[in-house]
Each structure stands twice: as structure tokens, then as C-alpha cells.
Length: 169
Figure 1: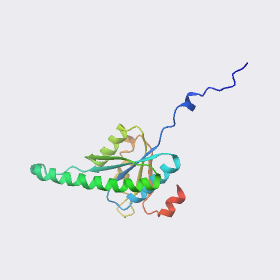
Figure 2: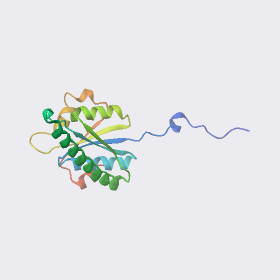
Figure 3: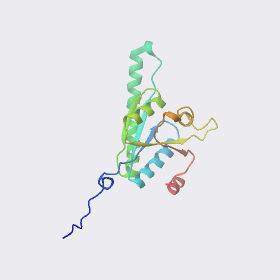
Figure 4: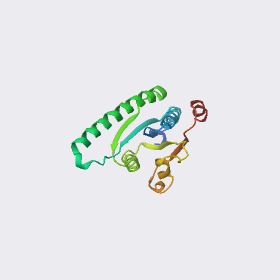
């Protein structure tokens, strides 16, 4: 009698890693474009979304009490914004995003988070539509910071409509 059952190869047994699309939260109008793109890609690929907001360090070291108060207010505002965006992500993907609040230099904190969280697999940024250029993060990561980025960078044109995003994802 021969055994007709097949044993699965290690590739077949190992669960496929979930793709995490990281979106950096700021107050730019193109944030909504990057967020929607990441959500649509995550939903269609079985991935998830992560949201990162970075609080820039203050310059008021000699007024430490005032700086601490400002920092607490900024953190509370950032957390409220993340909660609002998390609801949007949930509506678009059916999953809750990972939320991160960091303090420091934005470009350095993005790199640090990517280094600490191996599940983050794609950085999604939307280019600014102003004549000044695409934005500081895109300028950095497509220039001198490119060699420090160890995951793919997706740059979405910041002027795309929801219909255009739906068509390309």
C-alpha cells in the first residue's frame, strides 16, 4: 500500500508574512492621498496599515515647564489625529492600523521605526503638489537618505482623486 498523502514543503507550511504599509502622518493635504492608497493596497493584498506621527523636539530648553506643557498638548493632538485616521483605515480595510507616536527628527524616527519593526514592508508617501517640491521626506529618501532606507518606497502623486486611486490600486 502506498502513501498518497503529500507532505507540505516548508514554504507551504510557513504563513505568508503580512505586508505592513507605513504612512507618515502630518498636516499636509496629500496625507489623505497616501493614506487612501496604502489602505487600498493593504486591503487588496491582505496587508495592514501602520500610522506614524513624529513630534518635533522643541527649542525652548530654558523654559522646560512651558516646553513640557506644549509637548503634552502636541501629544494629545497627535493621538486624537491618529484615532481619527484609524477609523478611516478601519472603514477602508476592515482592520485597525498600528499606531506610533515618536518624538525627534521625522526622517530619523521613520528609519528607526522601520529598523525596530521588521513587519513594516513598504513606506508610502504622497508627493506635495506645491511648486516648492515633493516634500521634505520624499526629498530626503530619494536623495541622500535613499541608501539608509531598507524597504521599498512608494511615492503617490499628491493630486490624485479618490477615483484615480481606486483605478490604480
